[in-house]
Amino acid sequence: MSSLPPLPPLPPPPADSEPGTGVIPPPPPSSVASTSDVETRVPRPGELTVPWRTIVLVTWVGIVLVYASVWRTARTMGLSTWWLGPPATPRVLVVQLLPFLAPIAMVIAASRPTRHLPLVGVVASLAGAAIAVGDLGRFDRLALLELVAAGAGLLVSAASYAGVLRSEPEIDRSIT
Image 1 (tube, helix red, strand yellow):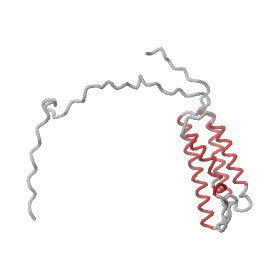
Image 2 (cartoon, one colour; image 1 turned 30 degrees about the vertical axis):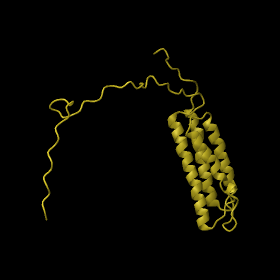
Image 3 (tube, helix red, strand yellow; image 1 turned 90 degrees about the vertical axis):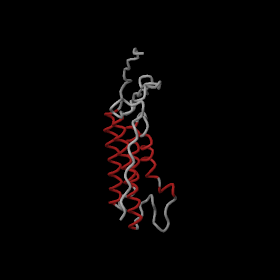
Image 4 (cartoon, helix red, strand yellow; image 1 turned 180 degrees about the vertical axis):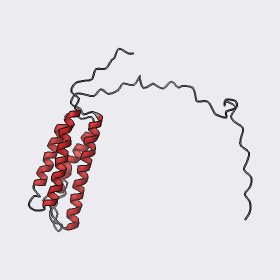
């Protein structure tokens, strides 16, 4: 086995570095606008605060995943929920995607500063409960999963009324 060649010597420090440190000084400040010059968006009354919007968003993403798991379970076990239909003759794709419409609309609405989001969430969860009622008596356990998802959406939407902005926050605009 041959030995490795010796390492080359280190290059000298740059000419503009501070003597003895070998560190290049930071560049001078640029003329980029500071954050105080940028206008921020003022939240409107009726919008949720950011933490509550995040909670609503995560909940409705979870509800979409619950419906996807119900779909997969029904197909794997050969069950036919009313909105999927039997595996041999499935329903039209629009009907199969019906349970996903309200939760996906809530995910989109919660990802933006939307006014009256809790009310829209209550309506979406009631739509999910109506879809689940159609499966009661046929496949009770899948219907129970759908009802639990709709109940979770209802509870979080009702609780998110606590995060609704009531009036426009006062901003001191005298600083210029």
